[in-house]
View 1: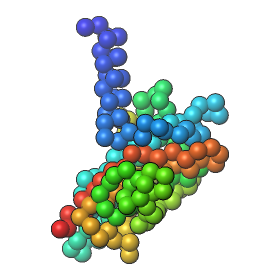
View 2: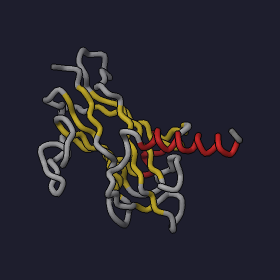
View 3: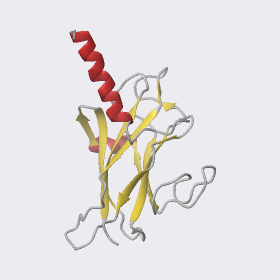
View 4: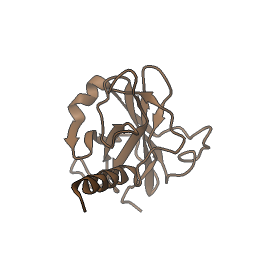
Length: 176
């Protein structure tokens, strides 16, 4: 197998890693890109730890960790968010259409929303083999999930244009 064929397989594999279980919905709106004015980002990928975390040392979970990548369909690597706001939404209950307890047209209200401006995101930026991503460890405070699972979604609000959503990710509270 030639080196060009191997490189092609590596890019296909990298694209599959970004797409499996964390791709944006098939009807993705586009958002303004950090790459340039003529480029459009169309991927928001959320990777979550499958169980809630104990972040304060007191018995019981009180938060979770996620990594978010913002990307172009023409590039298989995360790119920086240089404008707009990235939000992490937490819904009480297992994931499903319309997120939890709502419909696709009118999703349920989130239990909690964590907003991050482009400037604030810089401190959470990490360079990985998948490109630039944002690693966030979030405490839910008084907004504790009441069910065995909760759902997390990333939402990007550009300064202009449509909102971009990640696919929902279910996380176990570890408490039954």
